[in-house]
Each structure stands twice: as structure tokens, then as C-alpha cells.
Length: 444
Image 1 (cartoon, rainbow, N blue to C red):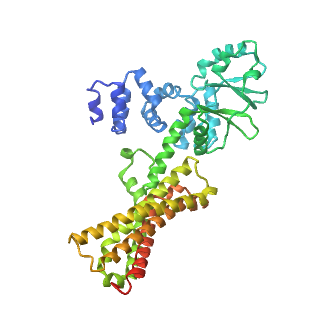
Image 2 (image 1 turned 90 degrees about the vertical axis):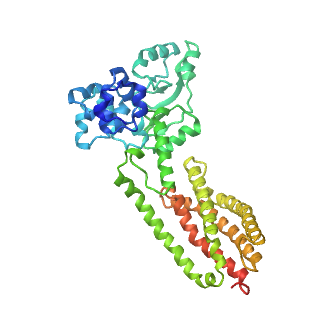
Image 3 (image 1 turned 180 degrees about the horizontal axis):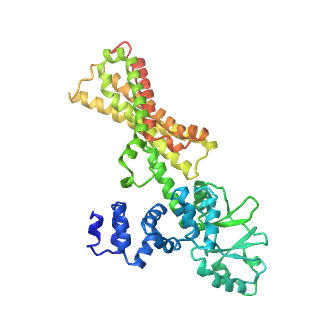
């Protein structure tokens, strides 16, 4: 990618900068941003995440910052302010107009991941006694300041308590002489101002909404969260869960912008824990040292056994974690999941076991390997062990997220590598116990 001082020699286009944005370093981004015509720069600025917006504005001379910060809606301005050090926030808020300053100050009183911190404080509000014709006239006057939050109009009483909601389309389709109270819907899906962003995202998904009103404990309306606001949250939460499932801490920045040492630190902790866990595999094998020495053929199938259990466990834990994230499964469903995964584990094991048995039988008959004269017993050992290990791996993988949720921990911490490590140790025990039961008196 061209360095910052080469960008000025290239004709910059908005689409070109968009395409190259991830690959640019911080200096390149500032240079490209300042090299765009003002209309294009505004379009780019408004579609960037708050962290990038704060970086760009912070790199500008103080006299230029005001015009850029004032492009943002109050909720977006609050997100930007949260990206700067606390000691500098007052100076950034002072760049806003007086009305927006009050809105931003109110938003900053909430946690960033609560509904109150995500909401837009400006929305279309109506009184229930207005006629439809009066309401439409008001909407026309107010729409300029409320573009993006005018999917619905919210009906409030004198104390700002939310009474109902009416879509703009319904208003235009109603008779002009009707009152707003006659056309509004009172069964409003709303969010408490302290609702966590994950629960809020579930609310959007469950009810297929484009906007959700936010209220306080007394039912007074505080703002609106739109689907645009929650879209970034959905991506953020899904990314965090996927990274955790992969066996790493969630990254604080995009992959290419995460410092190398920070990347190593976030991955090393889990790898060290998994490494220590795998040491127990050596301990388990040492317990069956005599069996391995007496029948070395058993050692040939150890990778097959432990990988089958780890893979089935990883599948189960991934499915359950995602089901929990989508609200499809709750703690009270654990027994239903046990029964379902027990059946799944047995079925999957029954599918894999014949493949392993057939492989031993064919290789022996075709003289591609020598599994001793008792190869049929060896095949039976492998087949039964596969069924047991896969079933156990499936059960363990599906139950671990429930245990973590019960402990009030993030179920996504039940990463696939962690489940695989857990099942590796127990899988060896199952394998050699089955071998002892079948091969004692022949190979053992």
C-alpha cells in the first residue's frame, strides 16, 4: 500500500479509499481523508466506526474539529467522545452545539453497552389528542431534524410516559379527522434503559423490528434505538463469540490493526491453559503403560480415538453456544439438550465406528498392516471405543456452556480447543478401559 506521502500524488476517490481503508496505517488514513473533496470526506466520515472517527478528528488542527464533530447525531457523537481519554472529553463535548451537548451528556451517563448508551435521544413524539392531519403537519416540520428515527411516531402523555406507537405510513393512510389515540398501537415492544445490548439485539431479532423505544423504570420515554444502531452490536457480539470459541480472547481492534504483542498476549493465555490440559493426556497414557507395552497395536489408534471425541465435542459446544446467543436455548432446557445430544452422540458414533472397523478389517486382509491374529477383537475395541468417546464428547461439549452460564460466565469461553482437550484425556480412559474389557486374556 502506498505510504502517506505518496497518496498526494495519486488521484483519490471515495471508493478507492473505502477499499484500501483496512490496509492503511493511521498516517495513511489521515492523509487519504484530508485528500478527499469535502463531500466525499463527509460520506466516508459518517460511515466509519467511532474509533476511526475519533482518530481522524484528533489528527486535525483544533479549529477544524468542530465542523466534523457537528456532523454526527447525538448518539454517534457520544460514541466518538467515549473513544477519547476521560480527561479530554469535556473539550470534545464543548465542540458541539448546546442542545447536542445536553443530549450527549445524558447518553454518557449510561454504560456504552446498555440500551441507554445506544439510543438516539431525538425522535418524533405526538400527543394522543392530536388529529391525524395535525400529526402529519407536525411530522413534516420535524422530519428535517429527525431523519433516520422517523420510522415511527411515539405517543406520549404530559409526563413523557409512552402510551403507544404509530407508524408514519399508518398516519398517512388514516382519515384526517381521526385522533392519534384512535390509530396508535398500545402493545409496544420497548426496552428498559439498562437493558444489555445482547438482550436488545435479541429483542430486535425476535420481533423483527426496525426501531425500539427506550424507557426508564417509570415508563417515561428516553430515546429510540434503530436497527442501524444495533447492527454494529450484532457484528461485534458475533465476532467476540467466534474469537472466544476459537480459543482466544476477544480482540479490541480489527485483526490487521491489533499490535503483534497484544495478539500474542490474547492467544498465549488460552494456549498455555490448553497445553497444561494436554499434559494430563500424558498422565492418562502412563496409567495404561502396561497395556500399551503388551499390545502396541493399540497405540496406532490413539489419534483416531481422541480426535473423534474432540471433534464431536467441538461441534456440540459450538451449536449450543450459538443457540444460547440467539435465545433458542436457556438454562432450563439443559435436560432436553442432554437427551438430544445423547441420541446424537450415539448415532454419530454408530456412523463412525463401522468406518474404523472396516478400515482395520480391509488393511489386515489386504496385508497393508498387521493387527495381529486377534485383529477382529482389535476392531471391536476400536469400534466400541469410538461410540463411547463420541457420545461422551458430544455430551461434555453440549453441557459445558450450561455450566459456564450457571456460573454467570460467558458460555463462549467453552472454546472448541478447550472441549477437545477435555475430551482427549477422558477419551483415552474410555479407550483403554474398553480394550482391557475385550482384550484381556488375548493381547493383554
